[in-house]
Length: 283
Image 1 (cartoon, rainbow, N blue to C red):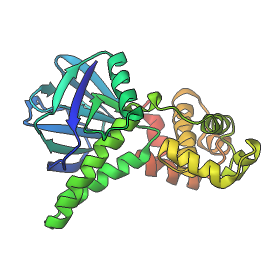
Image 2: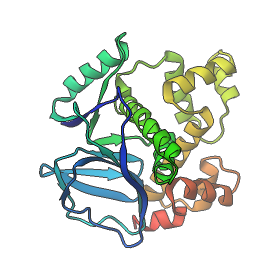
Image 3: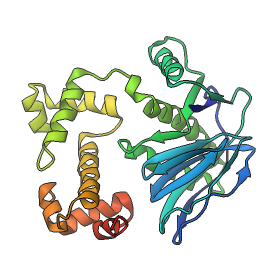
Image 4: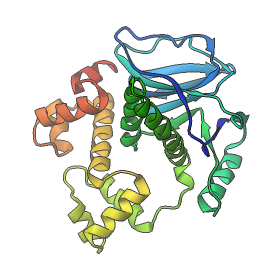
């Protein structure tokens, strides 16, 4: 598997960034950049080749393309594809590697369990971050503010980018981070009770205080109980829209939304399209 090594013991410099909307879709350009390219797919999907290997990214995925390597597309993304990219200057110590997942896991575990300051992180070409919507908001904020004319904001976003690389590393390697048994039980309860569930309900079932569960949950997942639960329900909505003939009204009630308007607003906020528009892509 292909990984990119980034140094994070210094502030990383952003060279370009933007949020891109492609009404008619687009084919990724054939190019070799002197900087690293990190792209998140907000809506749609993207197919990119690197070293003649196809990498497919869907909404919520990050693509990490290292400096100095040719990457290109052959197939167009769908209409209304929405992405956000950040280009990062290459630093001494940055290196792309082809290593096994086991080697990557060993490195991740050593970083999570070690006592020394982390100076480097490794990132696979595709990072699945659907469970971490806060990362998408974070890179959108970085992209917007890095285009400011203010030297202060440029320095601020360069600093934020360094932290973001570490956060992305944690998400990419999160399966190697031991979660507390309480949080695992909480996630199981959430999956089984998508119609109606509150933090208080789960805390009561697990015989733990609300504040303790809230603290442990945020520490383990990087987001709040409410945002994570909403993410689960909306992802289930996608599955129902793609694989069943259930009406929008029926899906609204299955997933516990108060009405179709509320469901539609939440869905569009996350995926950039209405439930009906999303379903039409798969018919």
